[in-house]
Structure formats: structure tokens, C-alpha cells
Image 1: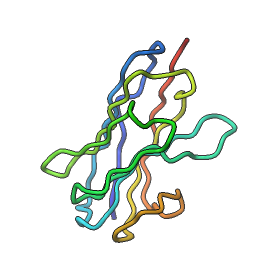
Image 2: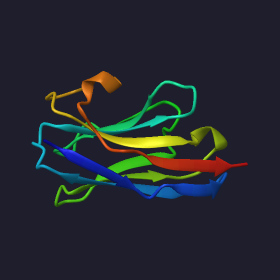
Image 3: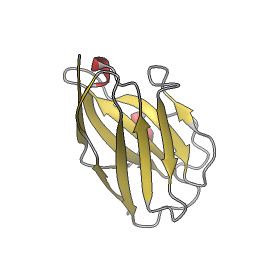
Length: 125
């Protein structure tokens, strides 16, 4: 069972940056896909970014392309989300997630079976 714990959320002004971290335990296989989602009040959970745990197939949601970067450490114990040029509409609870489906390319939330508890990101104008 993969366990995920997010950290690094907080409050920032528009144009600022934050780096989210997700501590990964339970030794997910290299075929897993790790991702970030977010959910704002009253809205559905939205795909932000994902990558195969092996390191390939990085993908981003349209609203964050060119501003956010997903990465992991070489030891495969942490997943990161670097968020630059933040906008008020980026305000949400951000979740780290893991999918055991090999070669995943459809990043619907229901494909991810393990979730962290979430970390709040608030961007003020």
C-alpha cells in the first residue's frame, strides 16, 4: 500500500512561487504513475500534473502548462511540484496521488487509488 504525505502549501501573492513536496512510502513499482490534483471550493478535482514513477511521460493540465513543473528525487522517495507565476485561480487544496495502472495516459482522478491528505495553497491578488 502506497502512502503519500504532502507538504509545502501556504499563502503567496500573485506572481510568487511555491514548491510542494509529497513523501512517498510503500515502494511503488516503476510502472506506477504519480500525480498532482487540486480542488477548489465548489469545484471538481482537477488534474494538474503527472509522471511515470520511472521518470517518463510527464504531462500537465492546460491551465498550468509552462508555469508548473513536476519532478521526483532519484531515490524515488519524494514527488515535487514547483509552481511559478502563481495566479489567484490556482488557489485550491493540492493532492498527491498514485496510480498502479501501468502506462497510464488518461489522468482521470478515478484512475488513482492512493491519495494524500492535501495541502492548501492560497494565492492573493
